[in-house]
Length: 119
Image (cartoon, rainbow, N blue to C red; front, side, top):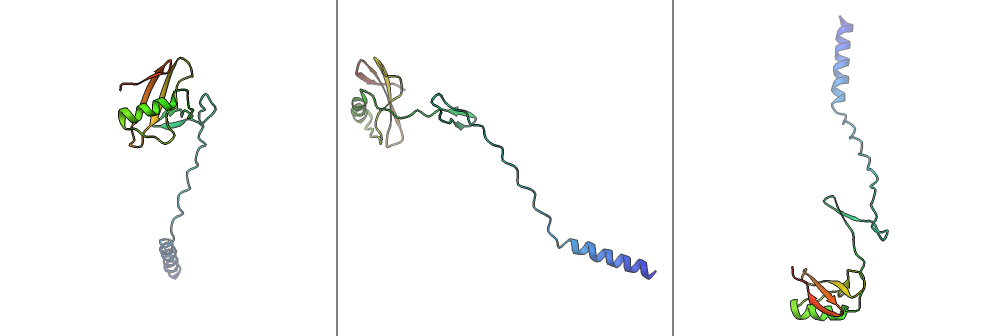
């Protein structure tokens, strides 16, 4: 009878002592290596809501100064880098300029005659 009481008492102490022990934290999830898609120029693409966005490098064109002046006159747009060529150089070029107020100014130049693009 003493053995049973001793066994019950010792098991109660052991089980009661276990409640003071904290369970081990769950293991950290293993991060999968993201496979980055590359654009035509070899630069990694940015993903926005699952859609790949390719950044276009800034490059000035023949009519960059004209487009910057046009942006100031039409939209009171002043930008940091200025007007950058978006299309390939040629007789018809498209320029993009990021304005200080957050808007974007687009212009199309045909044979160096520039006009703002309508949105």
